[in-house]
Length: 305
Image (cartoon, rainbow, N blue to C red; front, top):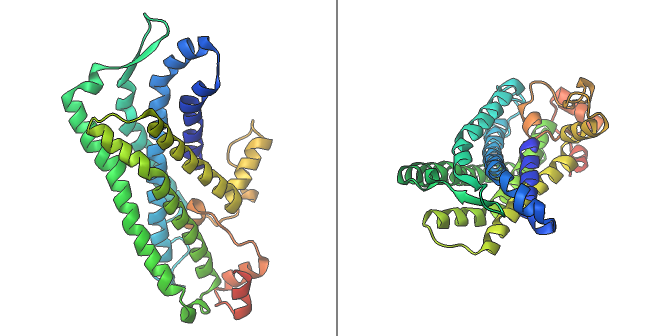
């Protein structure tokens, strides 16, 4: 997911910020237009992937908490890291296939200078507009993600409110607290999604209705998508030790494999929640309690606050 968010940031910087910051006419009039028909579909695919990976993470949280933060379940709730990787691979392949038509929507007029990006007849075709733009993009890319995240958000919120009441909170085990903490972080990502994707959703609906949209509104929507991905990267770096170690290893050893050594991996191979939302409690005393699966005392409870 970090890779998808990084892709959104880089593509948005190239498409929407570099043209406004550079003053080289040869670049603006000759080089940049040739990159737009390629970079925009990649940007759209990255945004699609981020949205569906967010849905996948929230679904994983529902499985991890098992509806009631039980102690009898395993950490992975029957879903191993290998299975989760397959789900993520399926999301990546889906986003690539879903956005392939975007490569044929625009072209570059090489006979004129400065070069002009134009809409092809393929994009304006009535069948393509109704099937892809109206049906697939709006329903699959927008409505499905919003509806699914809204339902799961309120479901998880209700479970957290019930099982963190004063009577039940002091009897939670350390594993339950770890699950609870990860779940709250994921809910924060969902709130961030709602806030930053509201304007792009409205812009998409207005585009389908074929009304004119001010350029400043479109830029604001793209800026919100960039902010969404940037804040997610910041959250991953600050709160998720696995992601932070991978970034450090990649910076220090760029010629080696992207994934760090096994000694740097902090999560258990069967903890699916540690792969998607790898927040690991590093206090040794709490880890000992987790291995024994013992309930927390009042003192332990104060340590995790």
